[in-house]
Image (tube, each protein chain N blue to C red):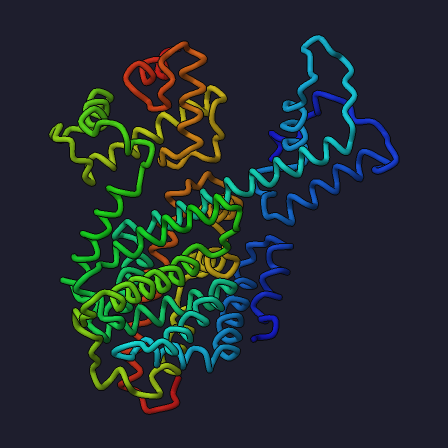
Length: 278
Length: 213
């Protein structure tokens, strides 16, 4: 953070709109924080970038007069661009992490899309990968239009559902609508009404059994919805040693795998206990 | 449809403090989990029913869409849906070893097509040769960017990003092994500064220039 907080290469002067420089600086800083960009950017870095875009700049000029209004517009545009780039990067990283088998969320996601395909009787025509790649392409278009995608996987899941529904409609319009693939078939156990309550309890107990470190990483990742980059920064703060994005992601994956292991164990134990013991 | 989630209130105050107080996190996490479960009790039950239907009608699909929409706003709910999916899919036989192998094949397919986009239009054999020359790849030069090549590509990209950042062309915090748009531009800027062909791809000449000095 300190690398940004150097002196500006120019001097801002007093004007009516912003009675002092500090207020403009503070306004920008607040705005950056509001946009969740404060981890990597600050008012100085944005102002410097705006300054570098000033077209009437000559290397020999020692004093440059820049209107605050111009500065403000530029800064806003720059922040908007940064936001879009960050948004895209976050989306790319999250979606691309679905392409790796060692990511426990990825296998679940793939299996859920497969389930949907079966429920729409499309599993003989399409694979999860066809749906995911279509939804990913739509996400990239959306971001380029300027939409912010807050929770990429949640967005992707919903878009996958929409893609499947569209494909289904297309198929129904064709001359011979066909039913293909197996529908979802269930075991009797899955239908039990009380199951969900117990599942939810088990997830909670599983959380309590995790080490504090594991809880922490899941907390910042899921609860605060931070990207792996931000998670790695948080970890750095408590570890006081550098933590790479890859390491953060790996620790997060392991924590989730351990949570699920605890959870499976608890579900097994529940069956042995009389009702109401948890 | 729902009032402000208590989870969100916690989230806001948490991010303000930015604290890593472990005990605090622990109790908050459990509390938020409990709050989200209680608040969305009906929704979660409904979700389970929908997920377990053998086929989905239009009305059911609309309901599912609404639930997914809700999850786009609430990270905790999104997490719970994923975990419910995980357990249900187990019971539905969608997570057997065979099924998982199938997903892994699909992931490989997705990796080959959607990762490392800037290389999409370049010759795969050339990329492999470049990786081999740089000492990152020992596999066959067969024009197929499989997992070995992709892994080598990520290693090389990390090194290229590190060297670019040492020279001030790339933001140190963005080193991630992905050859995305920003790396592409950084490579291009570096190539221009050395009067090399500015393809934006770290070819042999670029790697040599990056390791000199």
